[in-house]
Length: 603
Image (cartoon, rainbow, N blue to C red):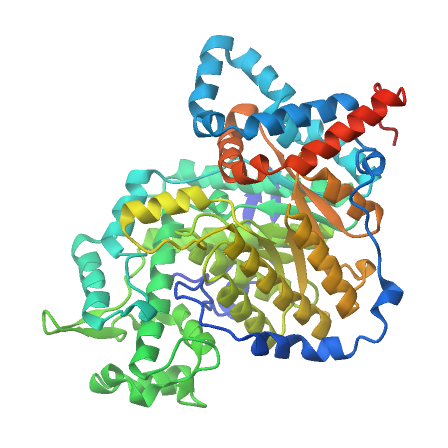
């Protein structure tokens, strides 16, 4: 089986870390995967209905309104020395040139050859690295954390050493299992096409990756680094955050394989719903007695008696809850192949190595969750590439079921540049309400846009990204409004508005005022990247809103992929950051005129 039967004891640095219990043997490993089907059209009436009750209770929102001024540069940049302002101006200007951004890897490689590694590292610390990264280790980043906290801004510690798999490995797996190429139901998927993808997978076999002890040891070292981040967040503030990456806790190849299983399961539900003339939304239920292939191979009794004894109609959440029994019932989950005239398994079986990798990922995640609880820290699971995301979301939701029972500790990340972001977030909110745990989300626009679009074009599947920036803005606000309404309704949900868009921040403040959600309730958090949008972060913090800087750290050489990706993904922002540059110039000129050019922050 690929679910954890027991949580064994791990030894870390001579310390015995004992699990409370075999949590994952008593908590069924249920699936709520990131959807791969398009979001159905939602009417404004539906959205208004969700938040109507909360808005009706608003009597005098102006009484509790907190005003934030983003224009006073003297207050905005009180935490910055003049040299820091000058560095920001130079870096922002350089990042606005497409040539430098497009060729950043080649330029950095050339810089290493010309300057040598030591001189290159020092140059980066004076410029790009110094702007966007806090330092190499926890000792080096401590002064910055303390300074920001003194000016009302907390920190989300993020060890920014990124893991991925090669282009060849992704291509081999994606092409063999048609992970994204399986046309969505809305695009006219047919049973033969769906089965053809599965048959090819069975013939060629999804690539089996051997997980070596050194690779497992590397994941364990990453876990130890995350534990140090959690402890550092605990001492840095009473209500801190720490970021973790799932690809650092488990083999990326395994996450890709696991995503394949989850996506196929989700697509199959959409296919069955289409057969009954329905869509795959939460409001629609499947009638198992009307699914022809189940009746033909006498599976109805198995589905109803084994899994769903109380009813024969299921929704998508019920369907997802069956995935934890996949390895037991793989021989029953068969579908007819019209080309071969045979019955075939829908899902692949995990190997013993893959089952062990699953078990170890959960053990590492549970250890991190326990440390977060003990240190009063919330964990943010970063979103990653879409070919990993179904597995990442699924694993994160399982940990939310365990640790978010009384208060939100585990935060999932939703990328609003994806076309199905709204469907994903509404589904997870409904799941949390059904099961009684606290929903917690970080909303981002997205950080892998160029990479995702290039891969979609190369692999020949539908671009998962919204058509343009304005479409992403609309999606972001739609998701944000939905979660804010949920907070107003039951006060159990939490959200971090991770945005550099001043209009989005103002929209959030307006909605909080309308819904009577106060800053001191700590239900709505704000987040920006270190080195960006100080004119948003510090005024919010000084006005009493819980605001955090994402604080990346790590060795210069190992953080280069992070800086390269940020340069690519933020090029649009940097090119349009005229307002921020104007504010920086305004403050520098003010200091020059008032004789404060040598100003140093005091805290």
